[in-house]
Image (cartoon, rainbow, N blue to C red; front, top):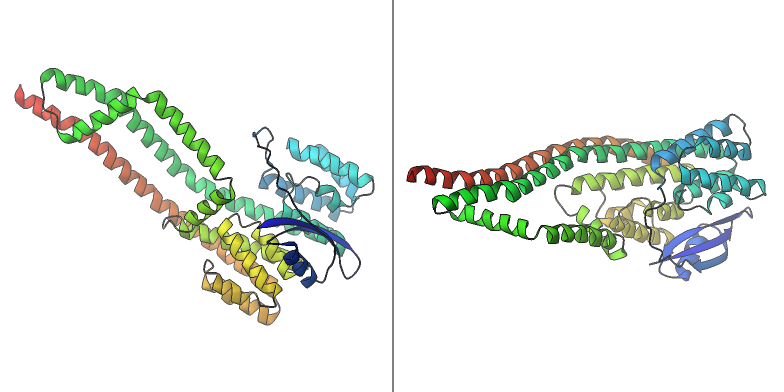
Length: 400
């Protein structure tokens, strides 16, 4: 699918613009028209091929959450937008965000809208935030929008932090285990093997296998190190391609250990984001389009784009969600209730809270499963090495 940038007029003659991912311009035209907009311009976005060398410091969710919270506090207190931006550009410490806000402040002073000014800095400001600010400017409730977005990004940052923190101990355990095995095979094993050879001890097959591994590692240390970095580099490059992103997303939803965790992350992010968008008055089809860009899983993104297409054709949301196959039955049931009662945003908000709790429990369960597995694997490897050393030693003592 390609990305298309559009500009359109609402029923109140307000200009709106954004980006849709679709197969053709005609599909984008159908989506815009279904939202009650009159299209002014639709053009394909040519993706940049520039390589990111990592010289720019990435804006994190925590930075965006702080920005939204401080911005809301000042707007709610009656401070003018340009004054808010001036204060924020001096208070915030993130260099890229600080630079972007300085330019946004200058553009707003020249008469541009806040959305137009911020949309020039898509690397610093998430697409979701830009859309919500556009909605807030049109509806005149920017303070409410900023409050919702500050809560949204605070929860999103909290969820990401929990997932990362849960993986710290297993990662350290795996690194220490790999380091210990490498040291034993590279430095300890050769010493014992030399002693066994001097004593003329017949080595068992396990010791011979570890001896071959030890010799291979010591003889090809440089090649192995270079190969390791090459594999990491190729993986990082591949995971940035469309095919790589899709493959990684499939694995996350297929591997038994991480599948439940990733499913709950997707559902939690989906419900929270869609609730935030709908409560701000954004049309459902457009909201699903934005949510598809936020779930951070290419498989789920493609599924949601299919759901969006069904919505454009006049279908409800619960049916396509049920047929998608990657969402739990409870979610489609709650969405159906929300559609029947006309309170879909409230139902989704409560569902998001439920899945946040489910996600936290799943993180603990996944961590509790991974840690013993790593310990068992490490124990088997270390035990095999100990046996490979002890068996010849017993043989050597019996010959003395």
